[in-house]
Length: 245
Image 1 (cartoon, one colour):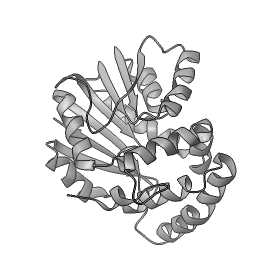
Image 2 (spheres, helix red, strand yellow):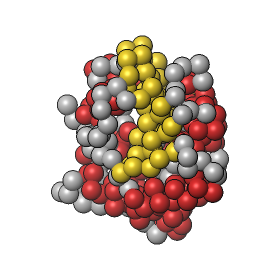
Image 3 (tube, rainbow, N blue to C red):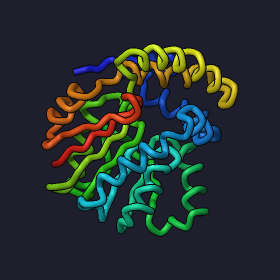
Image 4 (cartoon, rainbow, N blue to C red):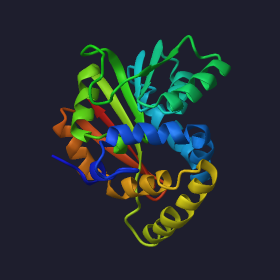
């Protein structure tokens, strides 16, 4: 089954999405962290912290962070959960290069390992991790169902997947305010700071198209997960999903 966000691509409607997403993030990597915090007014830090803290009372010795980007979620998991290891994966070497520098400066290189991995075909054995996390990455999966099945596969029985994703508010007046912000302010700031107009047009479009709430819960269940729950943050601008294998 296909989903609307899978057909939204940054540059070329006829080229594979995965290749374009890699190219886009390689291009915007130097300014990604600045824009991330600027465009969310810094609220994204609180969303990440609340989501990571869901794992505090759950098994988390070995963590896989998929679509890690510049490693913010992996670093937060390391600091707050103190796992034995965190494997941070992404397709974008540009993003991970920024992440490796940040991790080294933070003195976390002995715990966090960066690896280039395709989210649709992870190289890890079945049942390799206690927890799999993804922050703001699943809407970029070329094939959402396949990516979620891979996350389920590499989890140990009883392990948990934690997903944090940007979502578009559905109710007045936040729905209307968000539309103006995402279609006017976000592309403008993105173009000025990252020099990539299409990237920050693509990102809000995928937010609007991505399945939310009960629909996403059903998709996770179809991938094999159980005990799925979700929680919306800040008027529905971001949503956390917790699911068990």
